[in-house]
Image (cartoon, rainbow, N blue to C red):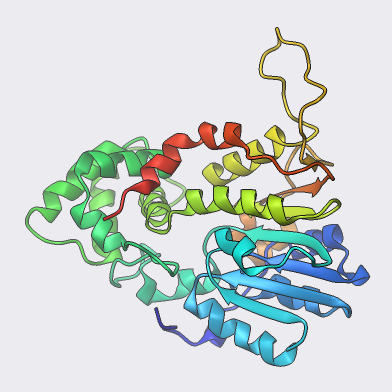
Length: 337
């Protein structure tokens, strides 16, 4: 997809930047991988320190345009790959002075503000929701998927209890007319929600989240990305993940808890397995959250949760237990339209 709006027209705020820089300590140099380049806030901040190098990934054409600025400014210290972050091991050599890998999940301000992308229920644009390198669009999903499957997507990926009712309404509407715009879809959802409890957020929020996640296979991508990043990190390397909704955080939390010093024993009736292969050392059990000052300046940061772990020297092992825990979501995103 081509970039569809001026990059300078949207103000970019890298979420929890001060906390991230405090964890990374880029003043000591080294290589850092920014898996979700977006507006380039983290990469730019790291590159201000001498003896640092940043390798960035993003699947979006808008991010690729933004990256050209840093490529011109730091030709020897910055590299950019237009690709999904699950492919980092295909692009990066293991003999780097790798200090950390950073994931900032969810939508960037550029994606959300671009009315032609269809991410916002306030826009009357084509129902797209593609982040880039996609197999499907929201238009295809909404207008062709079986209503039962669509209901499962909305219920599970959006955590929307009215998922099946919304899917039935969508199926009924599309039987006479294709749903082609974000506003059109939002109005259908609003009619389902009318008369129910008052909502702090737009009643279409959860459904739009579900469709966007499915279109971009975000949970599959996240799980694969965490595994590939863990393979790549050397002992002492830091893995940082910022999530923005409960499903993302559930996956990230489970990953760190299963493969860290905080790993729980499977049963209280079994002896503690002291030989368990922990991959990370966690310094905090609870996630870091934005300061009140940051939330006031950037309201979109309010739901952010930052979790991080420090890789140990133990060899990587395939976390089958982790994959099995989220098998339902992985299978749900597998279908090809």
